Image (cartoon, rainbow, N blue to C red):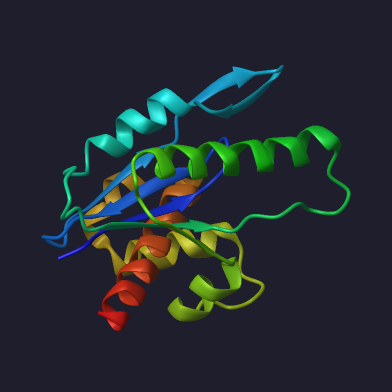
Length: 164
């Protein structure tokens, strides 16, 4: 069986891990101030990922991260933050030899049947319905990033198993 990591990137992002036994765990992405703004803390992120992998030649793990882009009108620091976060995720996973697949938000949202114009709160509500065992971890409105990471992990699990 394969372990799937789903990542909703960003400084308020989260990571969900779907373990081979079907259990799902969620972690908030750790942050640190870098060059005057918050970004994902690489060492702490690496330590979190390592908790869920079993290194070795038969390691069967794949990460799926939402392919975030820039929003027109955002400032230079916001754009820098998006790419800095993406770079930390890509680098840490590469160093741990975990394949990374970028997923456009439209792809995982369409897979789950989420309406095109639905907001993050809608995603959280959908995740609560689909994954009631995570209710405690998704109970607050600000947990929408956790919910989206879990939905990305479910998308990744389906894609990984559809190919195998």
